[in-house]
Length: 243
Image (tube, rainbow, N blue to C red; front, top):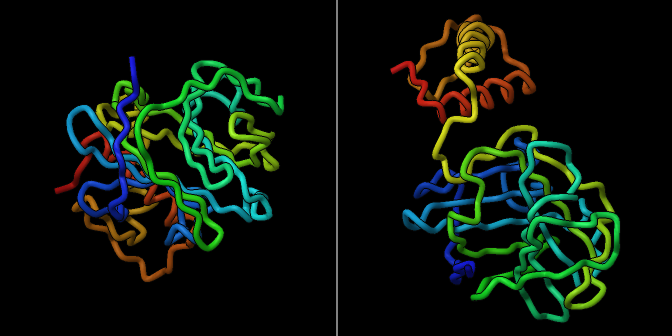
């Protein structure tokens, strides 16, 4: 059961040609401004193109020539332990992406039994950002929304990852790469719609869902705008629209 991997070197722009993105922090505007960013795009019914980027200074690996960038999916805490991890590696100008199936010791410096992913990929390093692009069979991705953990760290050699220098982070919301199902229960949808209407639309928030707000003439705080946009995106995935 091999992982299908193709070269994925075309530019991916968030919001263009079906490209969806997860950015940390959510307010970052470009790859260079983000601590971590994942872009994903369906290229067929069976394959998804993924591009992940990590800020080397934020993850404290800017002084390392050899490094790794990894992500995995979980319902639980931000630890990388117990996840299926996809790790992009850069060692002595050789690049690879590998999958650690089902188990990860986390705090150990040596990494066990990596299963190499067959195929080609693109790994770049520019302006303090490491970026890894590849295409993957959808069967290897979560079939429903899950929270994503991510981390970066130095390499000991081409097959051994050293421990990350910064505690792995986790996205605050579920990431639904395949977009097959809504990640909210019916009850949560109703509660979120109520909050969205009362705390966003009635305060003049500019909706992308065809909703009309009641302008109050009062500038909305940045934190509230982020909350409103998050609620809006979550509701959109569940098919909610005012139009």
